[in-house]
Image (cartoon, rainbow, N blue to C red; front, side):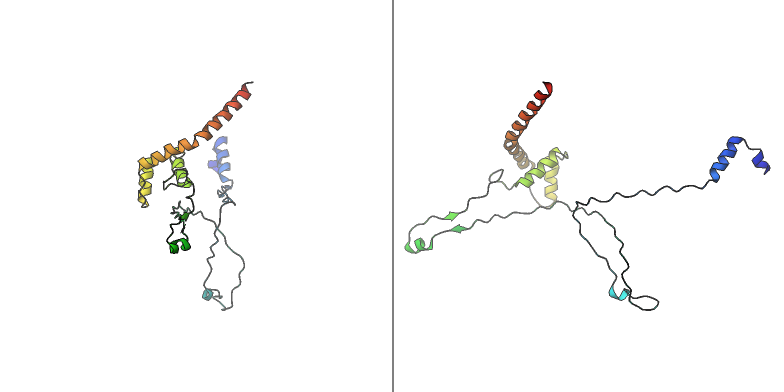
Length: 186
């Protein structure tokens, strides 16, 4: 007791403050994952042999569930689209020895004719380059890593061709932007 009496008021206040019970910090709560994401439910259940009480050997009943969610990253997948166009000829003309025309459906239109690039592939290359800053030589390496040979010169020519294809859209947007800025100045 003598020690406490010799303490200054400040020191006594510190001792009293240290004697107060500490409130525990709230554990950080994880924000729920967006509901819009697709979900795959995996049920991890006990084997039927384990659904028996270890004391009395009676069957166990289900009393609830414990749920948890994790995020799985599914890397972009690449697939080949094989376009098959059947050819048709006239059997009657063939039997008669008359030359008949061969009929075939026209090739579906593509952004860059006679190219292996689909709109989605072109979009991916453009997005990687301009939104994520991934140069074409690194994209070339990435494609090579998954067994696809697309050199950067080819991708560069695709980019130039896409810029030509998108030029009318760019011009329209530029005109609209100028109209909007002129309205703001009036």
